[in-house]
Length: 506
Image 1 (cartoon, rainbow, N blue to C red):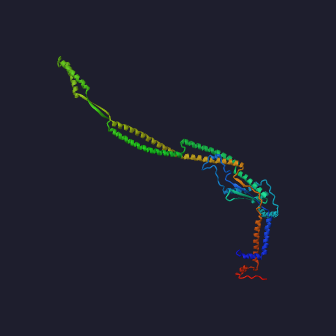
Image 2 (tube, rainbow, N blue to C red):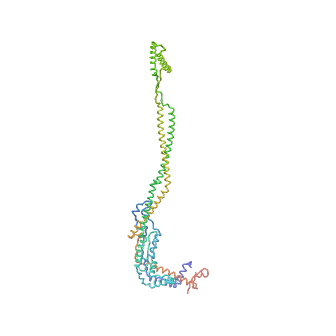
Image 3 (cartoon, rainbow, N blue to C red):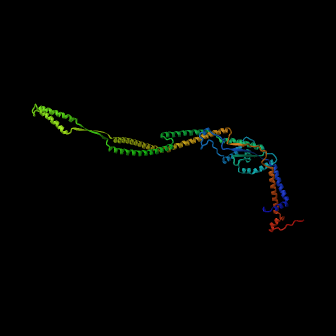
């Protein structure tokens, strides 16, 4: 049917113009009457801006002290679609509507033209629901319940694309009531939002938890301080690096000193060998002198001989005196004969300067060797102590790390509750000043034009629908009329093309 040429439809409308005009006129008349008598519906609109925080520069002095590049004092998080949907659900919730109309009386119903028809249509539409509730013995709704659900049906909230704005609208037949209800709803929304965003007991709870965590943090810090005083550990990583560097330096110095000590020992041994083969003293001069004992003995011998000669002149050779002198002479002569020389040799010596130099070098070398040996021993002791200290650090590293982690965890928990306490305090202050993270960007307006019905749109739509239904009625008559009126029908029924068309001359 839709593939037929436009000439067919023009011919059809012309041929059955009475039917088309009748149906189109009736439909257009109904649409026009419904448009005229339908009560006007007015829509009040408001805009709500949702932000991630209540104030752009809400900063606590306590929290500002811990500000850093990794932890700024002000954190801005974008508003998510989930946040906006949550606000939308809260705005259109039954609870909020009931809170908004609490204590109000239902406004008078519309009593203008068409009110009776509208009331009758509403009553007929409510019959199925009442019947269903009666059949299942469901609780009956009160007048207030029906009013609430009627308000919810006319209340709507939509998200503005690519923004943090919620568009709230409410439709009613009375423009003043639409504005009034939306104003009450938004005021109650702000009140409820302030209440659910801050619990008065939250600040006390956070303060108590912060105090407990502060005590726990103090205990952890005291335990860490006691452990560090006991072990001498302050910064284990820095101390370990310092010890490793110190140990490396000591081992290097130990190696250098060991080479110097070996060299000094070899030098001492070589000087000792040279000193053994070098005479300590050397002859300075040699002279011969007469023996003083012999020099004194010769005069005595001469005197004894003189005395013997004198005694021989008076005594006999065999006299006792002569025999005594002979005995003395014989003894002195024997002494002279035994010595068999008349002079003795005297020699003088002096210290060998080479031996003195070598002895001095040996002494200095021994002193240097002893100093290097003492230094080597000291280096060895320091290396051993450094190794023990490093092992001690390694042994206590686990406990020190555990205590530091405990302090860090306790501090983080404490600071989180301090922040929560400050946020709760700030939230209370903001609530008291009615500063919320939602703000009314556009208050509810009082509509001056109805959103329905729109006369020109309804009339144009009614005309289009009336014409379509008129053409449809003509097509219906054409389909069930046994007469043939058009070449298209001839072609459809016979399956043969139409060659010519003869006009009726009657």
